[in-house]
Image (cartoon, rainbow, N blue to C red; front, side):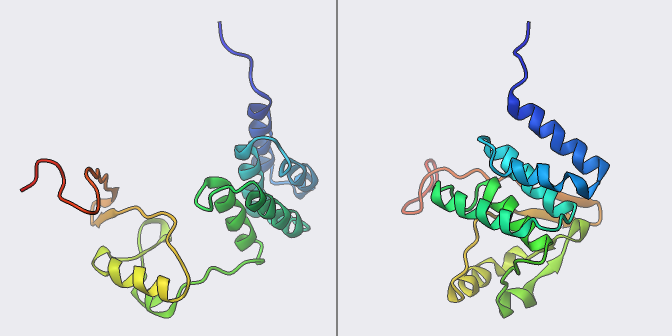
Length: 166
């Protein structure tokens, strides 16, 4: 005995079908989903609008982003990130990367930008000097065998040593 599917699961499936079909006529339906009660539906709809390069989506995406601000959605949650990404894909937003950080940038797996961890402090300071912040970071090990995520466990706090350390 299972649970009945939620309305959100049907909406998410619809978004996946729209993206697979790739028909721009689904634009109005995707724009309508930006008003869903479910944040994941709103995020996926925004990403689909960006992926499909739907004309007329910029203003609805801007309204969706303002709605995130009004709901006090943290900027590092997936919905505002997805909306920002879609706006960038549609040419309505340009990411800001200060000059020093841009020079230190390298390309890692799948042509994704990355920065060597040896320059992490410089990058943080450069971003702060330009009123920019890092909302999320992840460390990767890159070698000839591939790219691997590195798990980091933090115990203790920033004001003292970790428990058990001397």
